[in-house]
Figure 1 (cartoon, rainbow, N blue to C red):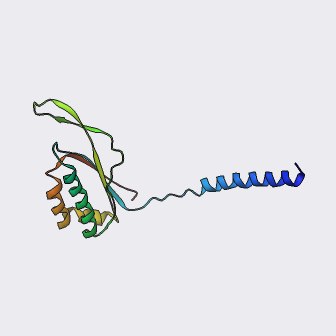
Figure 2 (figure 1 turned 180 degrees about the horizontal axis):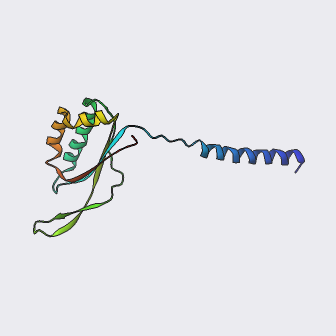
Figure 3 (figure 1 turned 120 degrees about the vertical axis):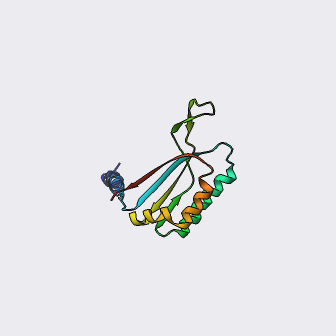
Length: 142
């Protein structure tokens, strides 16, 4: 291998290493001031897939009507956890959480206004009768 070829190979290795370092260093993230509303739940026994779809479609419709909803996530990829409930005989049993959805709000004012918005109240009339139990988590960087 000639000197020039070795130098070129060394330069290529250095450039690749530098590119890897720059690539890692370029990983940027933010801490938005929005509020994320995360809901985990299981549906009542007997709830059909079509009824679940109606709930999720309602969230998407609501997002178009309630000012301040920026984004929604509607497809549960992986949901973990369980809650204890009493069965028909009054015995405590674990019930797996099966579904989740997320809504992102522009700010706290938008999040608070959503609670009493007519579109939210209309959606609840569909959702609440199908919901077994749910937990919500409201998270922000503010």
